[in-house]
Image (cartoon, rainbow, N blue to C red; front, top):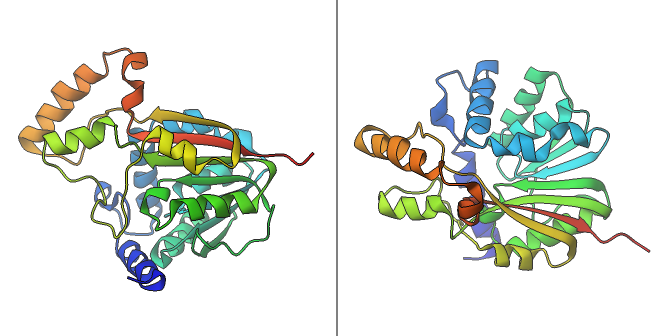
Length: 259
């Protein structure tokens, strides 16, 4: 399949889906809709607000690629960052704009391809790509584009799914599909592979995160077994012994500053 056709198939897929849509019964685009999905996101990814400390980005120019409905981007904006969001899905972009309107914050949100960004070199202080790299056709190409538009000394923050993560294993044990593993592009990676993608950055750190929390997605016996037995047992083990199996590989890097 040629590049443009594959790109169109990815765009069509995400235009037809809203991530975590099943976690709310509120009208799409309503304040309650955005509130429910924000609450669920940070319940499931409770590490994220702590690790990110959105308030620390006040006054920074932040670009998020794959911004979705804008949940994280709103946090940057509320904290005082100047934000730009790009997503391949027009559905997501339209909802992100409504999300910003509900919170009375400003941002430049547009449809765009993260592998071919419409911004000059050295534009942003921070580039953020949480949960998009594993769904793009060419991760290295997107990472390179983010590097291009990042100012010297600026920070890259991104996330990939961990091939060695606990959720990958549990999906096989419980015979449950991973979220969006039916997407036109879906991949899991090791920490070493992520570091290789980021070879043009300095001070690269890859930190496994996202450990088991009770799931609202599963029902019946599987839910009982997962939520009671697995989650309970996993989370009594000291994190130092299980950190390598975190489902999310969070990476941080710095663009080399000019001499």
